[in-house]
Length: 94
Image (cartoon, rainbow, N blue to C red; front, top):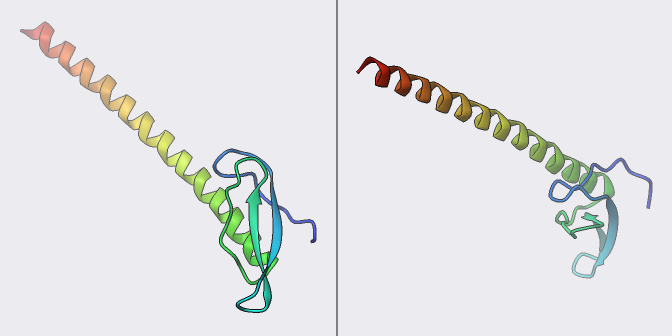
């Protein structure tokens, strides 16, 4: 197995490793990446490179999801503050 540049696990943040496993039905090795901590793994791929790309893409997608979630939370917080200010302003006018 060659040394690869694997991102951390998108689920738990643990380290990962790329492994191969013989698949009798196709008489070849299949490659996958597996988290050392939680056991999350990719599906089988034809080669190590494909498995690593798939794993690192999961990480990128998870990171992008976290950014979007933070942006949505911030927008909701701003909306709540504005709603509270408007309600207070209406209450003081009455």
